[in-house]
Amino acid sequence: MAEQGHRSIKRFFANFLNRFWRHALIWVCIVFALFPVVWIISASLDPANSIAGQKLIPPNASFINFQRLFQSEQHPFGIWFLNTFKLCIVTATLVVLITSLAAYAFSRLRFKGRRSGLFAILLIQMFPQMLAMVAIYLIIFMIGDYIPALGLDTHAGLILVYLGGAMGANVWLLKGFFDTIPKSLEESAMIDGATHFQIFWRIILPLARPILVVVFFLQFMATYSEFVIARVLLADTNNLTMAVGLQTFIADQYAKRWGVFAAAALIGALPIVILYWFLQKHLVSGLTRGAVKG
Image 1 (cartoon, rainbow, N blue to C red):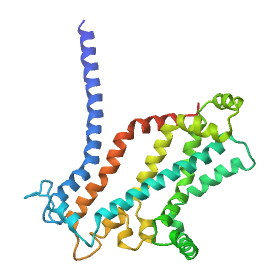
Image 2 (cartoon, rainbow, N blue to C red; image 1 turned 90 degrees about the vertical axis):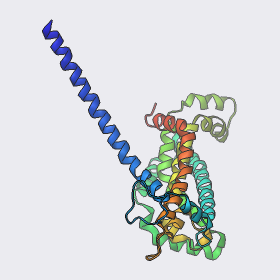
Image 3 (cartoon, one colour; image 1 turned 135 degrees about the vertical axis):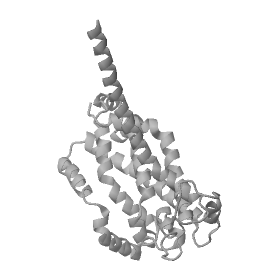
Image 4 (cartoon, one colour; image 1 turned 30 degrees about the vertical axis):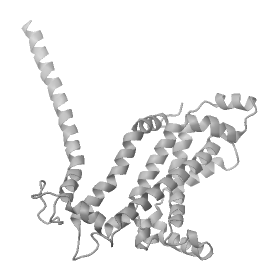
């Protein structure tokens, strides 16, 4: 009886230590992830507008940095925000439409060069766009000579570059999900006289809604935070994206506005958080269903 009680106590302490280390690790990760957010909130509320001697709880906290953000004529934050939102919506929508068509063709149609085409897309995607920055700049520059609306310092030209860089990984992601959809549904539709496009539009896309949401969100987030390409291709202040515009707050060596920068970064993070909040159900189902081929 005593031996059994000793084993129960030993098992209790073993389970307690196991749970303790798990919870401790989780809380360490949470603190590590949330500390930068808390620090940005603190900097945005600090009227000193500087990170020198920054404290976690700033003295005389106020919303003066948010007022400065929207009152500055040299830094039109509202225009940058609208530019970014427009670019993200258009780019993400076009990426979903184009990559879904390509993924359906690779998933369902059998044609010469299909396998090599898939691997070529994947191979090209291995090289980041920054390696081809000079070539991209020259291509957009030459396109602008013939079609000014697609040239340098235009949002349409920037969207073209973003579309080219988003094809590879998203095509593979969508193809993996399309492979899980039973072909019997398409065969039944073909018996009723449906074409490939009708099958794609009326059967495949409604069933693939979770993965389409995933692709839309990932591309929206990638475009929203992209800096290097936009910095190279855009020049006019009123055409800048939010990522490039925010950099101007801290670009001057002698007039850095860290408090305003923190306030802008805090506001800029809200659309991604809100979008994720509304789409999280589809994001989880889309990523999990597309991970395993059925």
